[in-house]
Length: 70
Image 1 (cartoon, rainbow, N blue to C red):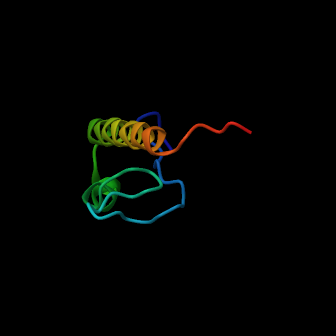
Image 2: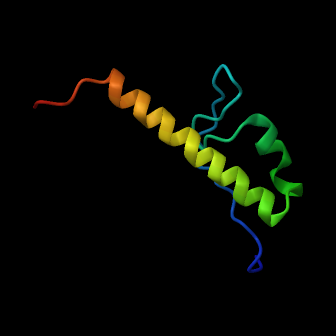
């Protein structure tokens, strides 16, 4: 790996939701397919978008799950 390589955000928990977004790494199916041929800048943009998607999922999860009151 060179200093310009970006490691794949894949977490080996691949399962697509209804919008073809991976529930593990939060990339779209198109982004997953394009990853290998994407430039450094494109990979950075994909990671940024995936992080934004993951944040939204966490926000929805927090609203749906009641707090643990053990």
